[in-house]
Image (tube, rainbow, N blue to C red; front, side, top):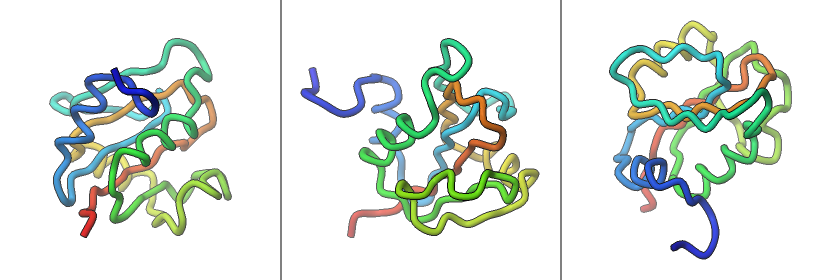
Length: 123
């Protein structure tokens, strides 16, 4: 057993298998996920688990080259967590999500609380 950090076995597998440019999405429960894209549903009720704690744990396990959020996302909702995410239209964010290796659904009830993370390399 790991002493700390992320403990979800499948999510750890997905993150450790991610290669350069693979997309991982951390999302609210309303983001549509097309068939064929793996979904890790962490949501167990409205608001639980919250988006930011899940995102922080994912970021601790993944090298991120680029992060995308919707133009419609609340101002400052990723302050202190991600620096300079690229804002794109929500419709474009959904297109990226359809290309993702996996979507991690949280219970976040704040509209447009979604981020597409593009995996980078540590060198």
